[in-house]
Length: 623
Ligand SMILES: Nc1nc2c(ncn2[C@@H]2O[C@H](COP(=O)(O)OP(=O)(O)OP(=O)(O)O)[C@@H](O)[C@H]2O)c(=O)[nH]1
Image (tube, rainbow, N blue to C red; front, side, top):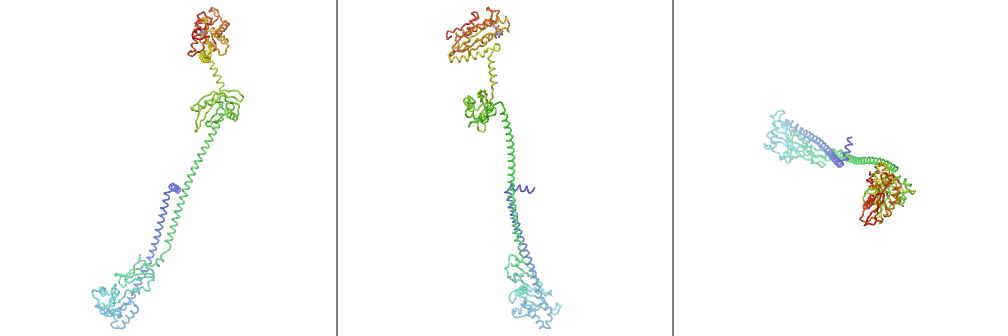
């Protein structure tokens, strides 16, 4: 889990991960280098230790050999008392000693005054004859010390009288053994340093090793081995010759020694470590790349998953919408209203429901075909309607049109079409809902008619009278034709009501109305109830003569009713009529025709009733 989170973080921050891998690589390479250097140093330490061992061994061997030589000399010194009795024999021992150890430059005897009394061999050592150690001599204190202690002493290197550097080994002599007061000087062994050390080392030295033999004054002897010496480091080993500890042996490592201590392990560690580091970092690098790829793959998988979910949701929504659309279309197909949608630019019939074609007796394909070829066959007024629709589109509004459409079998159906302009997705549409409104039209017509009729008499009412008189006035003015008007009033009707009752009055008015209606024979003539017991008859195109003729017919018709009126001079119901006829002229209005007829009626009443008077108008043409 933790590794997965680390991998995820690494994939999230590849630059940091790469830097960390590079840092790790550098660290590992550094560690490898450090290990390599450490191993090399360990090998060097091992070489030093080995050289130290060799040098120490060499020093001990030098000491042993020198001790062997000096012990021979000491044995000779121990036989000094014989020297007085058997001098020749003692000298033979000296010669034997010189023969055994060629390192001696000379074997000498110093008397108790430190004066040279005897030298063997003399040859080569003539300069020393008669030499006496003065207190200034560097070895003088050593002589004193040896004499006082009774112990042999080895000097440090000093310049020999014979020339060159040498060492002197002083052994105190006694004429009688174990008798210090019989001190008799020193037996002196002189060594040439080069000869001595060279001899001591001759068969001990490995040919490849380089050594320096030193004392306090510097290098006394130097040996160059067969290998080139490596001056960077060396080892020292102190050498004790006799009782003198002031010597040392310095050894330098040789190439052979270094080669023998060197192994291929450091290089192997360096190479294998470097390869392992590179492999590890390369593996991490590959892991990082794979993690990045895996991460990218995961991301794309997640995106794909969400895309699939989104598409499934869209598909479900689409199916849902399709189902809803199908339901809506089914329902619109079963609607009594015709629904059709016209798309504009280009113009096409986008949709029409079943009612459209079914109500007209076509199949959908047939109706579409007819509309495409000859729309006027379906809608006779199609061109005008198309123009109206264009206007509606321009003002982006809505409107209701009353149109007529022709059934396939020929009969015409009224259609109220509600049209609304709609713009969607950059295109204009007209949403049209059509309804066969035959019944509504009938009802409207009936209502209209009823609104124009008088409730009591069934004649046209005062509103209809006003509208018709005005429209006929306008029409006849265009045609320059007279308009006739009769104003009628029942005579003594108050008395009638009073005598016979109001109900009888109503019946009488109904009978008068029927008589008026039945008396009018020309189309366009209208009998109206003007108000109360007063009536008006509009006679379009009638001049005064024709008006008077109609008035006479009306009088006759009322008379024929024989409605009894007990309080009338005639004993039956009569009417008075005022007649007027005008050719409608500019500047005149219908109310003036009414006034004329009214005045004539007033005159008829005044003249005794049951008569017709004609309007008198001097300035006008009253036919
Ligand atoms: N029964 C009945 N009476 C009506 C109706 N409308 C008006 N009247 C009556 O008609 C009478 C008219 O009387 P007046 O205007 O004095 O006229 P008149 O009595 O006919 O006398 P003249 O017109 O001068 O002959 C009134 O009494 C009204 O009440 C109606 O619808 N029914």
